[in-house]
Length: 196
Image (cartoon, rainbow, N blue to C red):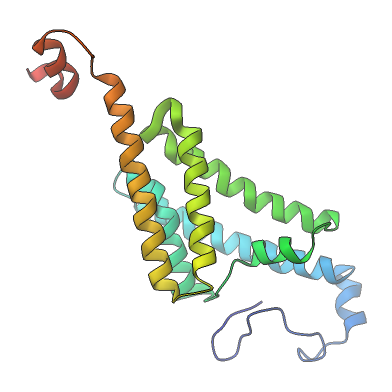
């Protein structure tokens, strides 16, 4: 595996540096892409668990959306500090990956897209797909910014952008519930509920 901590490197070690010969590693994994797919599968499981934990700890709908950035901070500080996303880097390095590598790359993309849509739905309602798409771009921008600035700052800025998106979509969703014309009772009932 890879880490940017003292005994870890930012990419998988060369087989000889790891004390193994390429034929022995590749006989187990099939080829270089098989080895990378196995490493990414392990990262996927760790990442998914970190994100699951942050979603479970979130206090509200917006918190569940923002849990992605909280999970990224936890992953970076406690698991594998990196300047880039191993999945994105692999997709860039292998534009036509072998099936086992394509499978894990697709799995990670589906996790991001599906969870963002799931967590965006309570906030944005019918516009959840648009919010989820904007959040995906914001997350990707956060990852790219980590190449230029300390990860803490990049994550803070990405999370602030995501929070702004959530607020804008929540406001738009709320605005659709309020009648455009009508009595003050109708307006008060929509805003405050039955207590008016």
